[in-house]
Amino acid sequence: MLKKKRKSLVLLFVSFMSPIIALAGWLMYFSAGQTRAVALTAVTLTAVHPTTPHTDITLTQQVWPNPVLSGETAVYTLHVINASTVTLPVWITDTLPGQVTPTGVLTWTPTISGGDTWQEGVTVTVNAPVGDEITNLFQATIPSSRADNLSYCTTCAEEDNINIPLYGPGVTRFRMVATHPTYEFTTDNCAADFSGCKLTTSAPEDVTCQSLWDDGINVISVCTDDNWWRPYTMTVTVGSNSLAGHWLVWNRKIPDENSWPQVLVYYQDGNMRLKPYPPLGRADVCFGSSVIVGPAVPDADRPFIDLQTIVVDPAAMALDVTYQNGESAHLEMAVDRDQTQMEVWAVYDTAVSFATFRSMYVAEDNADAALVETAVGDFALLELSESDWTVPWSTLSGPSWFFYRQTVSNHNTSAPDIFIEALDGYRTYTSTLSVPVMHSIHLPVILYAQ
Image (cartoon, rainbow, N blue to C red):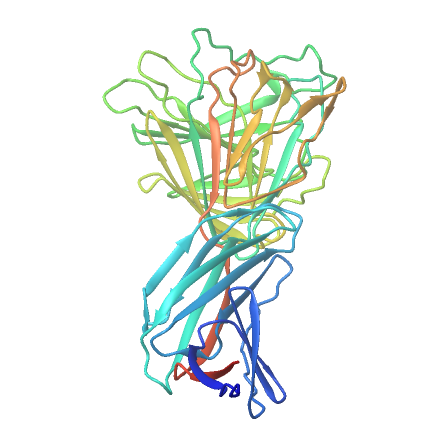
């Protein structure tokens, strides 16, 4: 006679380290692709997943399990969503709770294309006691500054067809740096080329320049043009001396040389041209591209911002500018054989534009600027497509833009490359996730053996 086998009761204890879902009357967990269930009293687990929405980026973070379990591992999943159409350089930090291992600050610097999402998982071990709460701080920073490409093609080498306004809500400081070309050359050419132009220019006899200041190192002059295109002059003051005119010219002595090359020309319409001292062995170098310093109207046929006054401090190499609209800026210059730098403190509406890069491009070998290097890549300013010149990009994120040439140019060969960088105006987005710490629950799973 066969006896019935007793059912054996086997107790297996499962640590809830796997993803948990709370349902009415059941607690389910997933492990190694299997789903198991144990009848329990209804459990509700509330997760806090704060989100910081913005037109540019959105941050989300989750932790699993939630609540976290003391002595067990937890996984944070971090997302940065670029909801804009512009590729963004992003500085990301995750400040882990002090009660986990590892702890501290993790950093990433991805470039996220418009419409794309960056994701990262971080695994930690929870050291906090039961009943505590741990908080993860997730942040992403992007520049508020951007450049728009409003350039167009031309056959005139003396026409500024490269028009790139720079915008920066919150930008109060930026710098411009003029450096010698990245290419090497033997023959220079600074002569104007009107062969492809239909422009009207002023004859030399229409321009009058007067010396305003000469201290043996700095020589500052003010020039007046009878055919100046704006209806205003500006007043330039150095010490107790003042002159009205249409542009300022600053010559500065090269140390240990009897040479006073021009390093700055600053026009009443806001355009500024910079160049460094010439390299050893050269008498001088060309001017080339210019930068409008101030809130110029970006879509004007010829962008400008009218200057009213400039007060120059030669000893500090500083300029204080007042615009016709009442806004102002403070500028400080430094010059040597490698570069001329101008740092600007803007007391004007930089959302209108904080600067506008102006240059010319007819062809690769006939250009004062042809390319721009940014945090998200290198781009042509104009490019030839199907026998026609086109604008290859519309908007590029900041915080910096380096305008340069790779091909030796027949026009203003030695003219400098120009670097522009917003020094502030960043936006930081924050997501904070706080979760409670619970026991590592071990529940019996009943298995019946026949």
